[in-house]
Image 1 (tube, helix red, strand yellow):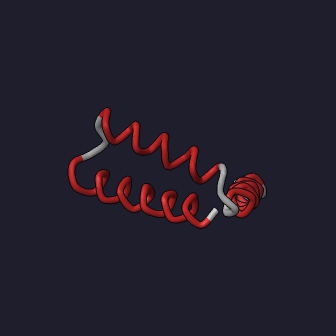
Image 2 (spheres, rainbow, N blue to C red; image 1 turned 90 degrees about the horizontal axis):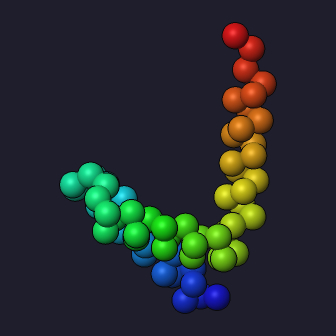
Length: 64
């Protein structure tokens, strides 16, 4: 599990650096997909899911 989380964090850092440096290219998209798969299988996945649901709920509650 520790390896999975470390690899997920490393891939996320790589993705952020790639986007900032030169935009998103085909190779970068592959790294992004790998980061998503590793994040989905890590222990942080439920936290990301609940955060996403909370943000979506807050946006849905905004009255225009």
